[in-house]
Structures are given as structure tokens and as C-alpha cells.
Image 1 (cartoon, one colour):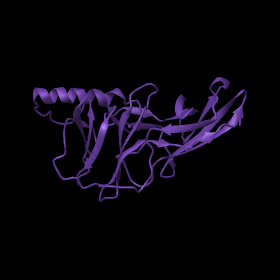
Image 2 (tube, rainbow, N blue to C red):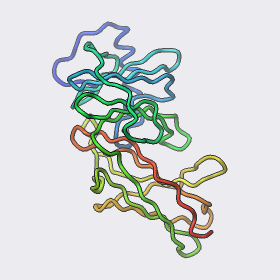
Image 3 (tube, rainbow, N blue to C red):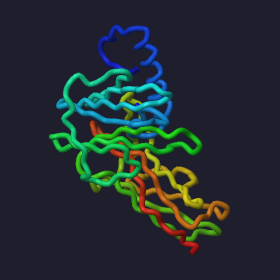
Image 4 (tube, helix red, strand yellow):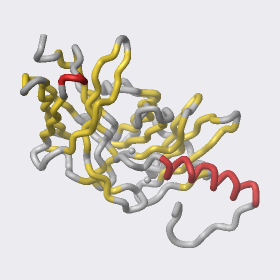
Length: 242
């Protein structure tokens, strides 16, 4: 939605090093979008948060239970676990797409795990987010344009345009894109990505050969300071071509 530690390097066993390398490959494999991707093709993902704002994300992949420690700031620590009690509670405060877990801590922050196929044909990614108040919002519209149509929209967070760039925990700057999908039968197929502008708007021309009856936009959650916003999906919009 992203090495792995700052300061002193801890001494670890050979087995821990192997697990660390395995988890690290997952973290960096899909960091081409904001928010944080922690793993792929997860089973039984779970989330815990302690009173200091440290999060532990766990999931099963390849028959092995994997763990990643996400501190309040900075890089993540694959293989590390919480040592303090979980103070988070399950929540239904907001509706988010692709939800696998949504929790709230006593300070009012929301924490979530989402899973979706970020890259067409790629694996299902496990995404982590933490934020306050509302999730990002996407509006979408379509209009005829030449022999195709133009899809336009706007992405906001807390009523403000999403930033043009989001930093990952490793310090890499990621350009903000809204991905436009077309409905194909009961599923969705990616058309392309549209870069957001300073006012949060984006647009994409859909040629005649890729027209569909409905479209949607998917936004990887932007990162602003300690806020790692959840990924958002627009309401589907009908084709302007009828």
C-alpha cells in the first residue's frame, strides 16, 4: 500500500534469517503502489495492534504462518511479532472495499487489511492501512468522446485531493494512480491507470475496442505522514454509449 530496520541490526538465527528473507521478498515484490503490500495469496489474515501503535499482521501462505511488524513510522520488520497486548477491537465504523479485517484502537484510529489483485494477472495482495476518520472517496463519470468514451473522476481523502505522490516506509515516492476497470461478465478487467492531478481529478480515454457497459475506478490508498489510507473503489458507472 514499502532495508527492513533502522538503527542496530539484531542478531538472529539462521531459521529467522530465512523467514526474514522470505517475507522481505513479499514486501518489496508489490510496492508499486501506495499503502503497504505485505504478502501475496494470503490465507487467514489477522491483525493486532498494541497501545503504542505497533501493528502485527499475520497470514498463512504455502502452509507457513508469516508475520510482519509494522511500527508507527519507518520500515517494517518481517518475522517480528508484538510483545504487548492487543488493544484493538473489531469495528464496522466505515465501509471499505476488499476488507479482510477492520479494527479500531482506543485513540480512535482505524486499522485494516484488504486483499485484491493489484496487477492484472498478478497475485492477490495483502494490503495494510491505518488512518483516522473517513476513507478515500472516488467519484466517476463517463461521456462520449470520438468513437469511444472518456472516463473522468476525482479522488479525495478527508475532503482534500489525494497527494500526487505517496512515500513508502522505505522512502520511495510512488505516483498516485486511479486504475480504471471495465465490467466483463460477472468480473472486472483492467483497462489502464490514470494519474491523478493536483486537484484530485483523473481521466482516461477508452477506445471503441475496449468499451463496456460499466466501469469502476480503484485507488491504492495514499500515504500522508503516519496515515496509510485504505484502498478505495468507486461506485460503478454506466457507459455513456448506452
